[in-house]
Length: 91
Image 1 (cartoon, rainbow, N blue to C red):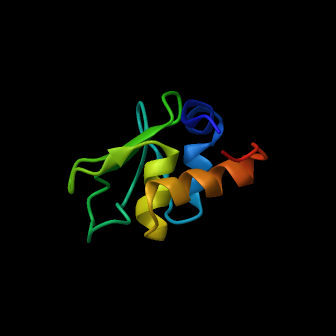
Image 2: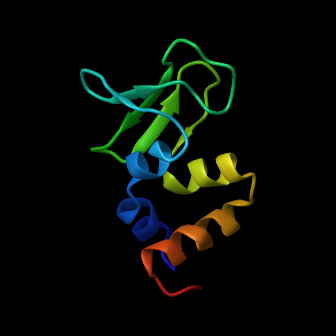
């Protein structure tokens, strides 16, 4: 399983939308960060780059990192879950 394939093929905006509401911004999707109390839309998602960043708590990354933090699992477990969801053979 290739991490770069997982990070590029997993639709981050779709994954995040299962957990929070994302709204259209000028260059990115915006929402309230699911990792801390946030009432200011400090969470940004770039669908083009398939990455997220919270300007409130500083968490950032791609699909694997988001799944890791939102589901409270290890990096390897998050990678495996995404690989299975994408139909990519393990290890």
